[in-house]
Length: 450
Image 1 (cartoon, rainbow, N blue to C red):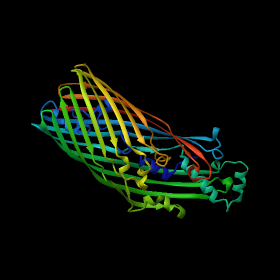
Image 2 (image 1 turned 90 degrees about the vertical axis):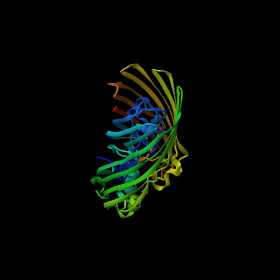
Image 3 (image 1 turned 30 degrees about the vertical axis):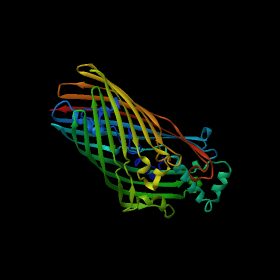
Image 4 (image 1 turned 60 degrees about the vertical axis):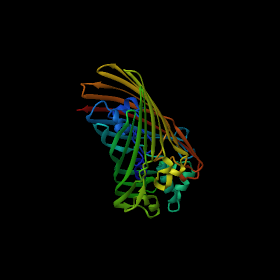
């Protein structure tokens, strides 16, 4: 028996986004971030994203290019405990989902001439990857039990069996198939100007393009020994697109061995519109699938982001930075105004250091702590987040005075989130979900300057 909820997987996929950063934002745009994390005071090519105002302090005039490839893998874990419903030990059922993005590309370019720097980038700024929950989801087991309860009038023996202690979770079988994808591509352009020898400013923007598609079906039936009646037959074929603009400003202050980088990304209002070819659902379930009807627009705003970083050169071969991020999540529209349930925005604290161990080798490491403004009403089986800390390690290999190779490994450790419900997923029984996640990213990139 394969238990898979089509609607649950759809919602899961639309919330895969960030492998690093806030609820809806990918901040891992360059391998230098993966290997050091605190790059908000960078004056190298990765500053195109992390500190664009600092580009005026690139070492010489000319063209700088960078190509980066990342491979990311996540797991999502739910331990659901519902006494009287789940027959497993301690009435706890374990669910595991996987999400992977084999290739996450990004490209940065900057051209410095005099006091001016013109820069641009292309990256996957949100979403990406595919998701599967082969062991099911708690919300769908609850849905199936509701379906069984709706059959009691037509099949009185079901009620007798439930009263005799046979768990309703053993009475049904499900089959489904789903193909789904989601990407938010970002193209950024901007200009940096060195106002003083110690101060520069940046103005620019990013065009964000959302594209996604979902095609699949779900069929659920009672087992033959319990009547064999079909309780659900759902099919969906839907594509979604949308776009929004992110204005960006920045400033950089270079004072001897100190460097201070500031950046503010304004909120991007982004609505995604459905082009639905097929939406076949039971009449009593149309409300649950209303978000996928043809022509429907759903808010998916990218929140504003403030970053501030301070870097210091202890030695010509040893540098370190500390950094702070704040994501204005409560101001960014989500489907169903879900953002209003948050207790606040996301706070991130980063620290990193790099050491030139040899003229050809630079080693680095970094740490990031992420605290979301989570609340029970924000968390669900299909879309949940967990506070976390991340560690990145790696190296830069100076292959020549023009060519640098970056290598990094980045992983995240999450804190479990426990959600207690008096009515578990709409059922008249109490239950508890414990949400957990894992994440790892490997990256390789090449920087070249002419």
